[in-house]
Length: 472
Image (cartoon, rainbow, N blue to C red; front, side, top):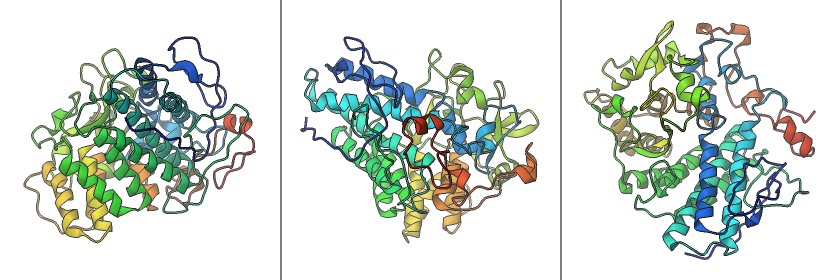
């Protein structure tokens, strides 16, 4: 295993507490607590700690619900059904002060990165010497890739879009363990993105290109696909294209067929599942998981808008229409991407699919002046949806329309709106909201970026507020 070098590029808001003896790994929270550096002394201990990181991802306050619904109902393609539903705070943008922001969107990534940094330091200090080199590399590779993902999530939520102002405050970079009395400042948007890129690149130096890590965990191709996604958000379309096309041409994944598309959403993993979070019959989000929140047999809390249904119905033979199911008064409102494998709760959560990577390649090629390549990749998705679809000249509108159609319900649309600074009609006339209370979406709207939560401000009063907010 190559020598791990210390990488201290900033600080973060975590404080350490003394852990219990042995290999026990505590649930910890930022600014209040810290895991002892002595908590990990073996490959088994490192793996147990890493499982704790995946548990954070699987939490309903993270990708098992909130990160998905946040990215959906704040856009124009999905909407919350009623004022009493689980997703109403995100839908109405009820996050306009430090006191009513969903604080878990800030804390949970730091919980996970605290664990990651303890694992990395244990390797750096050569406390983990057992196991094989391949085992140790796999652990470190996953740690770096996941840390890159968490930095990326934080800057998407709490930083203004990169293409709007990369000098604005982003996240507090969490790439090392710091002392309890430190009160580090927020890094810029650009610095946070750079940290995410560096972490994902570092992950690639450890992870094997053969698919040796079990489905449901981060592997080489997932890290590279996420790197392509991060570069897309940065407007670095050359790098986005390079990494996306490498995943497509060199990775062990293939697109699901037209005939198998609808049924594939009930499967555990498919040929295009690059990275999915695994829910099981006994380990899932229960009634707060996104599968139950979305399903009409559960809460049925959010639905596709009439505008999105009409968009998909532009091609009556589009196989994706088979995913639109009734939800109360909405005859095609339920997007059945999380129907469950054995019950309503246990759908796996798609973190990144090969379909998205094709669309990253298409968008990056189009924005970089390469329409021929863009057509190759967008048509792979269009013609999978309907093999008899008519040829269309490729342009950026076609690519972005296909992205909306293919990725509906997976937590992308609001972030696409923000990263590109586009304006959308949220279709509030078809919801319970009155026209005069329907928030406008766009990167010029202060409330579209989240304020720092009150508890964090109380612990670190000098932390820079998100532009447009104050710490009062």
